[in-house]
Amino acid sequence: IEESEKFRIEYWELEEAKLRRMPEAKPLATRVALVTGAGSGIGKAIAHRLVAEGACVIVADIDAQNAASVARELGGSDQAIAVTVDVTSEEQIVEAFRAGALAFGGVDLVVNNAGISISKPLLETSARDWDLQHDIMARGSFLVSREAARMMRTQNLGGDIVYIASKNAVFAGPNNIAYSAAKADQTHQVRLLAAELGEHGIRVNGINPDGVVRGSGIFASGWGAQRAATYGIEEEKLGEFYAQRTLLKREVLPEHVANAVFALTGGDLTHTTGLHVPVDAGVAAAFLR
Ligand code: NAD
Image (cartoon, rainbow, N blue to C red; front, side, top):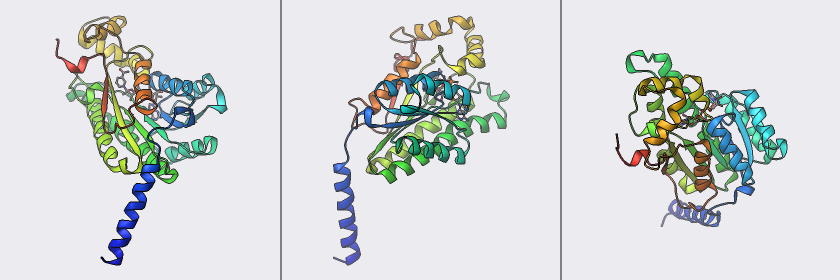
């Protein structure tokens, strides 16, 4: 057996031994999470849940005011800090992770949640609409995950990356080609990163929510009115409309998405990676109408 081959085998044995020593799951009370888009809606609910479970959270959002107010709600600098970050900027992402490391010693849980929604039919969707949607959700989450992987691999303690994708990543909804395509890109990032990072104890999973109307900035700023017009209903009835088309007849709220983040990162799903969890009260399971 050649020297180089021997070295390769020894190296792998060492790596595998390290992986075996790595805990399968760490309690959330020992963890530091960075949640993008945590200044509002689903991201804010996720930040609340993680802090309630004892984690420290970096509330990362392009909206400085909202990020600061959520960090305050979460108890201030002992458990949460606010960082202003535009996920289209590599420099700002690096800074956000650096701020997390300075405040809490490192980051081992990342939630790619920041997003916008440009909801238009094909012929009204401009190249700029496409680029903006993909810059924030597809490229932005790639950049955040890359920085997360860099930090987690350096720490060598494993970690979790969660993508808040969408039911629209899998099923074609009306009039939102740019949004849905960017969400589909995110769901494939989940598989690719799960494959590449698994050997470092880093799990990567996705969550596909159905329409979360209440508390969502995306719905409040135009998407809700647009969806209601598409379905021919009043905007105030949208939550109920979504609930009625689910198998459980229940509306999906931001807390329900936060519950799934907990299940994947702090619950018993210790051997799950590369998965997409629907949080949609059953919409994706059956075609009712
Ligand atoms: P929201 O508008 O309440 O939250 C989105 C947050 O992302 C905001 O705080 C916003 O400031 C932030 N953000 C936007 N652009 C950013 C950027 N460039 N850099 C950093 N932060 C940025 O909306 P929400 O409904 O809570 O959506 C959160 C995520 O959940 C999105 O990715 C959305 O696509 C996804 N999602 C939402 C629904 C829904 O029905 N609401 C369903 C499926 C998936």
